Length: 405
Image (cartoon, rainbow, N blue to C red):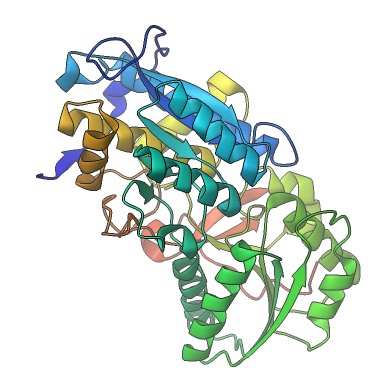
């Protein structure tokens, strides 16, 4: 099947998703399932992601729906994983039973793994908006696709970027303490970082972990990270723990050249600077990120804030783009049958990614976006700025950042 080169432009703006019947018989709305943590500790980001998907559905419908299918509209049907793998699995099954032709989700790697297995058994395409673990796409799945970089890419690119910062600033980075959340997410990013760091001449990498649940004080772990007098403390985890780590580092008055997140759910979130206050100032973050230099991205973010009353974070932008990928597949195949849609998605090429990626969204044989990439951001003066590489930079990097927070 030939590749579809598709880009949804500013003409595809505003509007509301239509409601109606659903099915794969060529009539009625085409249902897309959205599985995210709508309640529980991660409900904030889960709700944002669901809203991002809803905005994409509204924009596509307002632009005329799926034109190759006589303008059929999309309809989003959401499910709440509650942040639990077994519930995410049952929610995916429920949505498929309701006739969704594709799924998006889920933010957490363990939940995403169970949803991917359901999608594979049911032969329904699943577009991962956020979930980093390499293992998800190492199962030889045919129906699962991922937009963001995987754990290995994020760890490797994070190490390469840190070495490039060393070269650019002339500040030696010989010793690193790496603090990460327990589990496949944190462990897989750390392993890739450690291997690449050695290739880049960063030979001393100390590992400290913290529990994925019931983690309310990071003081002990941050103190342990500081014992070896590292040049940089690197962290990987979610928003709540990232905030705890930043505040603990400030309280302990660490003397390091910088704090550096890789795949951190906190440090590039627009709410983090205000929540962290002085503890966040100067923190660096290597992560996938919406492209702040893109006019289309900025327009979508502005409308999202106007409609939902809160900023559109990168995770929500990935949910928006996931819906666009499914819509592009529907346009290419002119068929809402899930198996035909899977083939169309596999051949899609989206030339206008909303994230700071190195090229169009295209999937390799495993379902991984071949051009997904990591950039570096920095918290300064209450804002999250893009600082590396130069192609996506909105400001210059500042390193070292002085005494630890």
